[in-house]
Image (cartoon, rainbow, N blue to C red; front, side):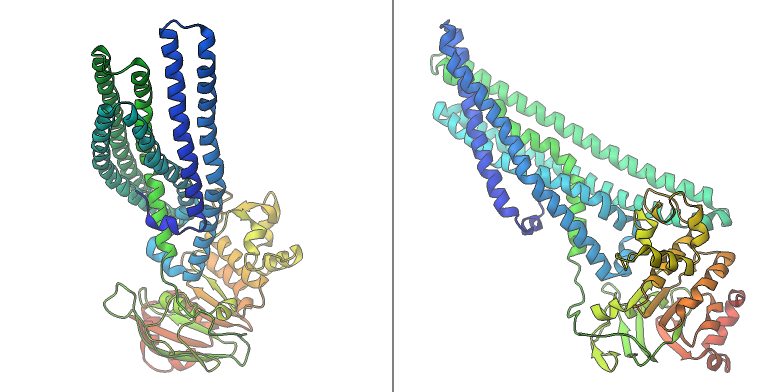
Amino acid sequence: MIDRRLFDFPGIKPRVVMIAVLMLIQSLMIIIQARALSVAVVGLWNQQALATIVVPTAIFAVSFMCRHAITVAQNRVFYPFVEKTTGDMRERLMTKLFRLGPSIVEKTGTGNMVTMALEGIDKVQTYLMLIIIKIMDMGITPWVILIYIAFLQWKEAIFLLIIYPVIILFMIILGLAAQSKADRQYEGYTRLSNNFVDTLRGLGTLKQLGLSKKYAGNVYQVSEDYRKETMSTLRIAMTSTFALDFFTTLSVAVVAVFLGFDLMDGKILLLPALTILTLAPDYFLPVRNFANDYHATLNGKNALQAVLDVLEVPETKDRDELKTFTWDENASIKFDDVSLTYDEAKKPTLSHISFDVHGFRKVGIIGASGSGKSTLINLIGGFLTPDKPDHISLNGQKLPHLSQEQWQFNSIYIPQSPYLFHATLRENVSFYQPHATLQTVETACEKAGLTDWIKTLPDGLETMIGEGSRGVSGGQAQRIALARAFLDDKRRVLLFDEPTAHLDIETEAALKEDMLPLLDNRLVFFATHRLHWINQMDYVLVMDHGKLVEQGTPAELAAHEGPYTRLRAEMGGLHALD
């Protein structure tokens, strides 16, 4: 139920100790409360004067208030820690995703990552708040009560001791069933998130192809599967809650019967018997509370495991071998027989890649779908690590990989679908330059062709966009990504991963006019399957099944029959834009 990695969180152990101390004090308050109440009731039963029950009644009231005040204190002690921990976790997750790059997002799904970073962390917060306190309650309170009962009547204490693990065993059986259901539910939730995001992104294309209704049915089916998994989980949860309440109530009733027989036989006095009977429900209360919250925390546990799994994905080490670096007209990058194999792959995804690029050049990377263009862009961006070190050089310095902060500080990565944060348009544009002035942001937006669109927005640059806010088309999203690049003029390396792949021809033609000035005086790696971009490239890398099969200037490649000319012939109409 508890992920052991939870105890590696900074500062959690002292707070667990503090919770344990408070729980011990609360357990003593429960005993004092039950004893005082029993004394008062026995006094009334024996028809004593009302004045004689004032003190026990006052003790009962004080212990009752202290008991619940300690509950509030536990939450107040633990909540700031949980809030800070989950906040740090969200920040670490975003930093990790940034350092790992798009490869991890492609592997797990965009919708899953967005859900994990937003709703997943909130579920982790609920999980942490509930699980630690409930576990400590279940591990301390029943045993303190049991020890006290043993001093009063050892037979009832033995019965309670025997029945407790039986109930725990029953909980475990139902809990495993619920866990299995919850795991499938979380997988369904992940599928729903990824399916919805992917469908939403491709909605324009689906409409043009007349497939929107078909995919609407697909979204409905995935949602329906998730609903069924949720209802199945809830059935298990309600069944186990009913069964647990039944067994604990039955156990209290059995204790009451035993005490009744002992009272009639004169083996126990009324005061200890009533005290035991009053404490019996509190003996089972922690396990009942834990069971009730167990099902509420299953998704939180799954979310925590998913987040921690991402945080534990190994990063490329020795990121800072490149101490200082700035790309200029004299800089160079060289790949010398570089190969890349994914962990789960049996053969290399990229094989024997070699090229040498100097200064400000525009390098096109072309090839059919699945040829390795995006993988090569990710490798150049430092998001992936080659199989062997020291086959990549920057300015003659051999490096094990390009996951170097200085290299990435010089680079801007523009994917097919740039991510837009739930923030203002100005904040999205100034992502790389958070302290940029309003004038510079407006200038960057003008260069990216956003000015006319911004004038139509109700709040201009202060309009909220992104998740849950104003919708942005694919072309507008790409222009925002271009504005980011225009704003940060210090980054002289641009990595484009098929930035116009999801755009129609008209939108791409308009966007191209604004993109071309951005490519000047920079090193550009432009992966695309739309060959009209090659007319603006200085050098071309032709990919085929993970191999660099041809390279050279467009004129050199067009001068002889080879993979480049065959690819142009196969993809004929896609290079018509000039």
